[in-house]
Image 1 (cartoon, rainbow, N blue to C red):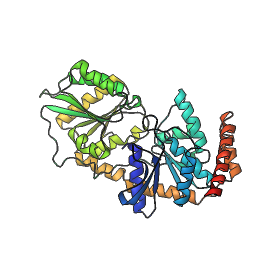
Image 2: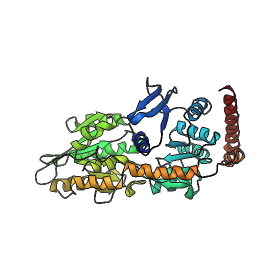
Image 3: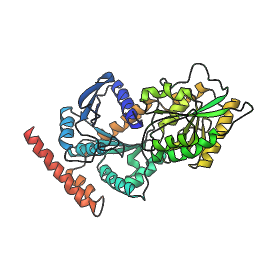
Image 4: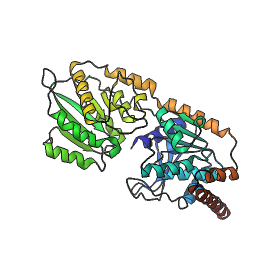
Length: 408
């Protein structure tokens, strides 16, 4: 379960605890299709839409509309909340929500550029998705600035509510790990380009060749995660004969991350090239690990320098930061692990996130809904060329819903 899925699950549980009824809608996962119930009777709809690449579905709009309309009407939904700019289903749900005259909220968990082709296309669709969205939530102030620029959203319609971590589930070992002959560095992320896997390939062999301190301590690595860049790590291990020094765990379930990865290590390494928040470094700090991370995106907002070593996204800078962290771990010049856990518990609490999200819900529910003409005009004015097309598509979906209403 990734960061966005974990966010949705945890906030849903806290909202249920606060007396709300929550329904989650997602696409099919393998043979998991239909309705399932999770903890505290959280109802999850797995739509019969098959992912085509990397657990993502094609943006169909019209094909998913009957499903989404049926769920929103039958479940008597009062508000639609979509997550992630990468999720086409979330954007489609937001559009159907506005067509049914429901208030909508969108949470953006990522940062995007402005120059490459994929960013231009994604930002254009985001602009149309947010044209009629009641309110937007970002997980960091850097993320807010990015979303305001990408989506042409008024800053007053964007709030910052960070992610959180279950500090009880992610807790240090009862007995502090002693350093004898080996310091263990752990990495946990999707093995894709934006997570900086190419940088890891340059750093690991150099660190493995060195010995640190008077005790000639060596550094080993444990890597968790899967993705298209995994082959680079496997080639690196073969090339430098690091089979006994670098352990590849593969993809882990979220409830396995603490026991199989984090508490096995002394230092957590994050080499992301772009990141709006990065829950992984908070989970690592909660488990008492020293964190070495690239200072990109919203990461400098997340942890104080007491718990983290900031580096630049380059092999030399990451290597230098990692060497300093290793020496500090060997000499014991680091905060107590439980101190990090207590900081995370106070700063990043899911109940607090749910309460702040609820405040956004109350605000948008009290606002007057825009008319159909206003919503169509917002689409039309979104872009010189694509705007009229999206406006006509929006009107088509409006009449499609009217036809479905007649036959339901």
